[in-house]
Length: 140
Length: 130
Picture 1: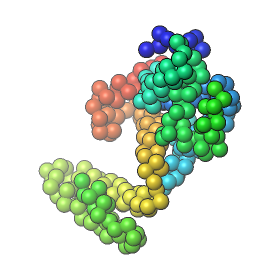
Picture 2: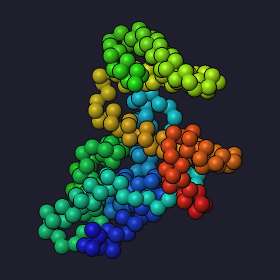
Picture 3: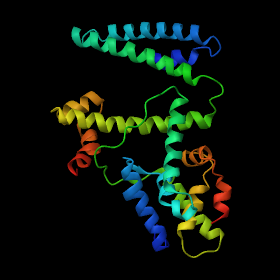
């Protein structure tokens, strides 16, 4: 699947897997972990993305009357596997490379793939942070 | 399950009254279910009833909370995702604490209501790598 990914794009996927998902104690790599790994590519600092994701979790739990928040992971997580939202994002990355007539999949294609989602954690978190997905995508 | 079916039939408008009725019906349903399991030892049965009714009342509260029509599908689905994430993290911590207290994998699995293989596969390697 990753044959046509450039070194940068592979680094993004690896960071999402080995740093972002692992640090959050997640058993799967999701689109939000790709987003965090892409902070430099989309030009939004990682800390504000983390705050936005935390705010999204808080808002979603509040909506059903749950005041409890996920505790920080205490033990090392296992190697996470690819989750559904990350797979969709990577599939869209390939589509956006094709649509632009590019032969290889670069980090910006992965960013376009992540930003293309209309539903899910990523668009909700970006909306909470006041970040317009279309504006972010247009810069790529 | 009586919890789900009762909660679903709870009318959304008179929320407080509906919640009370639902809680009563759920408790009654659980008692009946408890009686059907009369073969189970008395102590275990009593603690099971206590646990069930407590969770049943919590559930009804939550159903009340998610009933408002202003909770659009996007928010409702996102809540499910957030709850799963929360449950996973709570499970990680709970398993770690149980192991630290000397619980066996078999006992943890039974407490979680999953097989020993499932709990081992999910947590053993993670905790060994520490």
